[in-house]
Length: 425
View: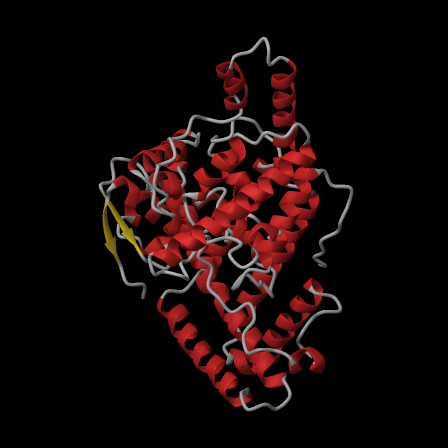
């Protein structure tokens, strides 16, 4: 099956979602050469709904509303220009703050290299999460918000003689939930106690799920948990993982088993690239890298195999999720294609020969890439292999746990929670 992005007659929100998807795909570590993203995204949405690799720090959930709340323009164009200036000012403020305290490379400053000219300002990444946490009271895209705000601002001007300042403020505030007052002293990404409690309340109150289906983002902010452990690579390594809500726990372990099962296909893809690439001073090093990785992965899978029954459970769950969400026929077709690939990989594993010397496995990987990237596939293409940098799509699925860990660590610091840093294995 061919996977493509087509630019149709999208409305503003559809364009925003497509741009977010493309930005996520170009983020470091996000290249998915074998087309398993649909499984990753289904699972991540259960564990950490609304989170993406574009989310860096929790305080942006307050920075953006503060920047957008009191814009004065009377047209969408003027409001957009004001918002861009406000976000550019925020970037400069963050850069100056961390430079002044001797941390010039503080992680998480969105747009630090381009400031007000960035094509992906904080609002671009955070708008959907701000909406899902119901910090913004209305739906729609940022353009929809600007239209609503323009109407309020114009009405306020037209009736300025009849309305008090309080009335005018009330009109604007109807679009936003009341957020904590901005501190007098700018503290960068450090949340005040009031800000952290506000975000904790939003994460819990905005989520309307069966208790056994609660997301980890919500559950791990529950006041009942007096400690927070940061630094694990995966959610299933969290010290309290056995206490996670039952359904969420089940889905999390489906994700763990999928990653463990399919990682060998990623290793084989990179091994084949290394073998087929033209001679360079790195070629032998990269071949050995993936040969060793395959040995380690084979030992890992042998120690804890993933059964055919487990893969069937994954398929059943995914189909149920997609039916429940009324997924499009295109999405269903992508999943069926992905699951066929997973089952074909299972067949390769059962052949009892070394995967690095298995022509059937090599053909499966080659055909999969060709189907996903017509005209752009790397395998059997000397020109593309000549510029290969030694790794592509070589990563483990964490289902946005790293993003969750960053944001929750910020919030728990503000809450004053006891935090224990755990070294990732």
